Length: 379
Image 1 (cartoon, helix red, strand yellow):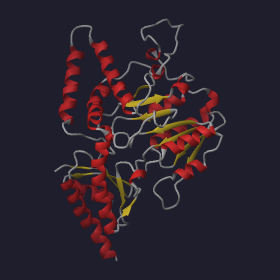
Image 2 (cartoon, one colour; image 1 turned 90 degrees about the vertical axis):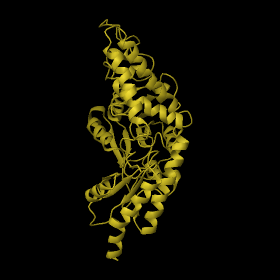
Image 3 (tube, helix red, strand yellow; image 1 turned 180 degrees about the horizontal axis):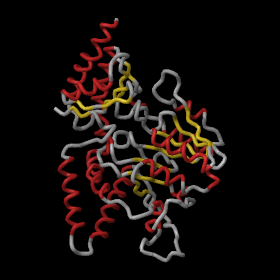
Image 4 (cartoon, helix red, strand yellow; image 1 turned 90 degrees about the horizontal axis):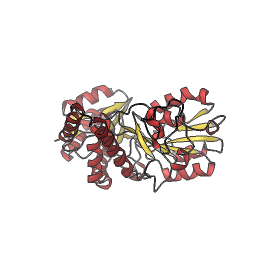
């Protein structure tokens, strides 16, 4: 029985340890060889990672590159925009965006001359409604950052609807797809946006340090990233100090010597998702999530995720009642080899391909003991 419910955090797949170890061992042999083969092999490995991501989101060739994480990717994008893109305008985000991105944007607002406008959640609700985001989105919004799937409610927004509104407003539209990619379909070919940021953790089962930035061709051509370096050039080995030029593709968002290990460690997860298929991953996940939601509704537990599967990512969040300590619930479940986490009073549960139906049964039984009985006593 695997009681792994942490796909919103790291993510895993059958045989992950062996496939990741093999990839890293192969790289170790290459990197340690006493010859001159290291960099060609390392850059080729990084390119395989970029190619896998490009296929995954159906992006045009040459529009995607690596970043250490989503925050760095967003910083690099903003630092590359023409000054008039943001100066004197609003930058729109939702109140349930990933906090790290909000921290970044709040610190950049003064320097880049934009006003950060955070769309609030309605009182008592767990996610920002699409219609509320649109209501805040007028022609003075220079850039809007959409959260594909939220980390606190697993709310899945209608990217197509939001992006269409953004085009009508003349805004730059970006999407953070971190919590949804790999369990929910996403394609920039089907739903064009100006840029995408993500990591290879979560449902892609990769390692930390393997983020990506994808920038549409039209926007990319206008960007002059301030975070730049020798790898931003068409030829990194052009060392003429007075002849710097940007590469004409996403490489212009590269800078110093690129990290390779994160790409090597994450490629097995990307390949596994590609081989398995997002539809198959989502179908298995949906079966387990629906069982958890059904038990929650039957027992009167607060569900802080959308009930409509079309509006939900791969997680289900439960609201813990007053008097129940989240840390104690997580610890009690861990004792039964059921692994999840909590954010405040929200219990986050994300079953995936290694999570068994037997584990879901045990999870429901344990939550009934720890939460259900308390409800009945209270009533």
